[in-house]
Image (cartoon, rainbow, N blue to C red):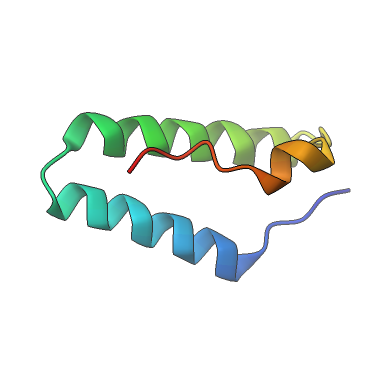
Amino acid sequence: MPSVNPLQLAKRIDTVLDILVGGDHASAINNLEILKAELIAIAHGEEQKESDLKKSPWEI
């Protein structure tokens, strides 16, 4: 079962905070929705493909 890497999670939250400080609320919300979907998938035991883990879906 996949687990959540706390350091990676903290970095992604920090990215969202940086985007909010920059004033791009739409991108911040989109990034939070991506993170939420990934966490829900992990909670339901769905494995992510290795290729999905290496690429970043994040907007900056």
